[in-house]
Structure formats: C-alpha cells, structure tokens
Image (cartoon, rainbow, N blue to C red):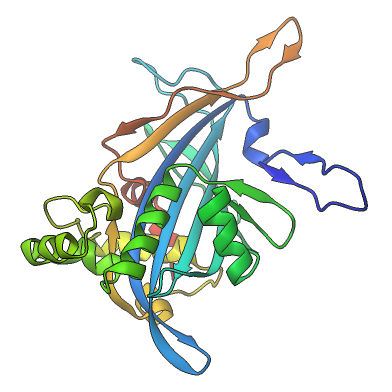
Length: 288
C-alpha cells in the first residue's frame, strides 16, 4: 500500500497498488540472500544483500481450482525489494525493481505474452541512517516518492542479518552457505548468541540453480541486458532463505453492486519456487 507525499498539514491520500483493483489475485513471496562486493567511497566492501521477491498474478475468472483450468490472461506484477547491509549490521541502501508482464493461455497452460511489452520501474528507498531506523525499529520502508512498504516476514531475516553481521564477524550469507556448521555453532555459543537469533538451522542453505540466477538477475535489474555475476560480483550465494514459498489468495466480493476491497486468506507455505514458475512461463526468453 502506498501513500502520496504529504503537503503542509494535509493527511496523505491512500494510493492503491495496481494489483489491488483486480477481482482475484494470487501472491507468491520468497526470500534470498547473497554477499556481494560493492564499491563505497572508492573501496570495495563485502555487503549482504537480502531480497524479498513477490509475484502478484491478477485475473478476473474465479474458476481457478478443481478440474477446470482458467483460460483468462494473467496480468503479473513482479517486485524485487533488496536491502543492502554492511558488515557492521547497518542498512546502507534499499531499492525495489517492479516488473510488469502478461501471460496468455496456450495449449493448456499460461505462458509469457510476447506481444505485450515488459515494463520495469526502479523505486529507491530513503538513505542510510533514516532507512536503517525505519526498517529495524518501525518494520517499514519509505521510498523517495513517498510510498510506504510495511515489512512482515522479511523483517525477521533483516534483523537476523543485522545481528549476525554486527556480533559474529561472519557475513550473514556465509552463515547460510557454510558447510562447517559445527564450527559456526561453537562460535555462536562462545559469543552468547542463540542460533535462533541469526536464523541458524542445521544443514546448508540450498544454492539456487543456474537458470534461477538468471531469472533473479532479471528481476533485480532495470537494465535490458543483465548478468547477476557482472552486476553484483557475488562472493557467496545467492541462496534461498526459506526453501518454501509463501502464498496468499486475495479476492473482492461483489454483492448488490458493491465491490469490496481485496481480502486476503491466511498466508501459507507451499512447495513452489517462484523462479521456477517464472522460467516455466517463458520469462527466460526476455533475458538477452
């Protein structure tokens, strides 16, 4: 949900996101982390980059479950919100890349409609200290255009990364990808840090596949030609922060001519990979 920029003493108007106007919407959300080499003040630093990837599939035909497959087109809104954090646990940058595309129904499945132009838009967050306080303390992000984004599950991962980078001298992504789990566990114990505080779980986090790296790179960039490796110079990752995807269905009720705002069902975890779905739709054909 967004808000317009405040003028004088007037309250901001609530500006609905484009996907909130549809009769039906399916929201998929996944989380990723990678450590990257970023140039700051002329020097390269190892930075933790955490990404919340959201896919909104919007449609008007309610026949979505059971034996029958809906054939109506899907208007899709893909957003990649990335928070960049230094090794002291401070958030130094944030941005969101919005990608809009359309799916058409062909031979029993929905695929990318190449006749419709893919549109991209970059939204930058407010800077540094202000952003850090908003995210860590208020669980929200404010963009430079005045829009506000409320954090939910993503805030847990950001907080874990901040604690990890600030107190363990171990990059959060490395904590996820390291195979020497016993050594890291011992180090956390010596520092008096509970494993839950930094999202430490048994087993190495799964690294995403090559095709998925290309899809994620496409979602993270506004450039028509893009290579994740060339753009971020990954040191570790990217890896999944959660092996499952969060799914939530929204709908608007129509009674006696009154159309209600979208109402969402309770979020649930499903065995679906957003990046795999995007590949199946044929989005990789848009990556040059």
